Length: 95
Image (cartoon, rainbow, N blue to C red; front, side, top):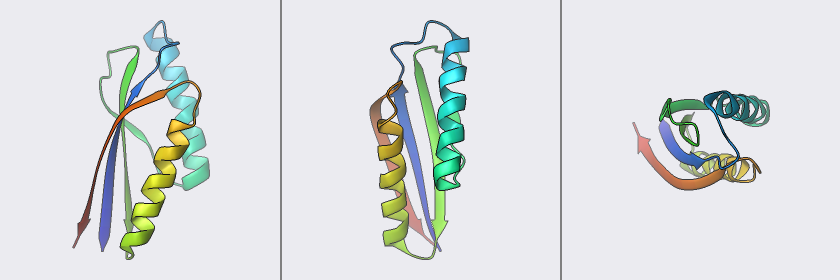
């Protein structure tokens, strides 16, 4: 079993309140799930209105599939015009 975990640090320059942040993240999470069938969750920076730390995990029996899906998912988030990807941290573990 191969497990990949990824944490994305995002900057949202257009946000002026937590309400704006939640609207952007909700839309992005819905589109992310529709595209990849992976749940994207806010894992840090809940009270900061221009930053978000989002995380997701992928489980498979093929390491190349996990790497590829994590790269595609990150590129999808990065292509969202409302957010800027500041940093990405990921790890792949084999059990």
